[in-house]
Amino acid sequence: MRLIKLLAKYSLAGVVNGLVSYCLIFACMALGGTPVWSNVVGYAAGFLTSFLQSRNWVFKSSNGLHGDLARFVVSFAISFVANLAALRLLLRMDVNVYVAQLAACGAYVVTGFLLSSMFVFRNRPR
Image 1 (cartoon, rainbow, N blue to C red):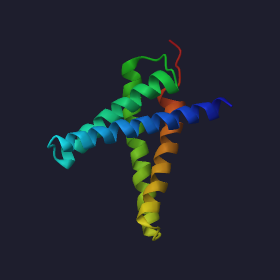
Image 2: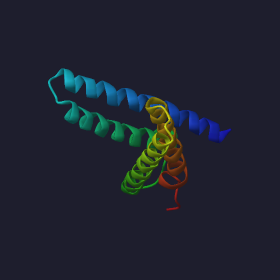
Image 3: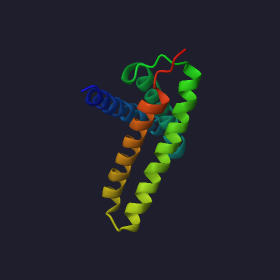
């Protein structure tokens, strides 16, 4: 039951993270920002939002901030590589590009959840 609750909170945090990211991306573009810079700003805010939600609400980490952040960066990179690997594999299999993007996102979410729960925010003895 604890795993289902964690996964539900992680998923809800992901929805909030997506809303924050895309609202900021579109707001920056509406204010005259280029699509690339708007995207960078939105993803940076999304990264920070994701870290803070995961650390303070989803996993309730009592570890040191800097250690959690360093592990989160590593987890993010690994999850993104899993996303790209899944996407490339699916595209080579001639899966529809939109379906492939959604499935690749699934690889990112599963990898990120596993790494966050077992590596990034696992409470460590002091």
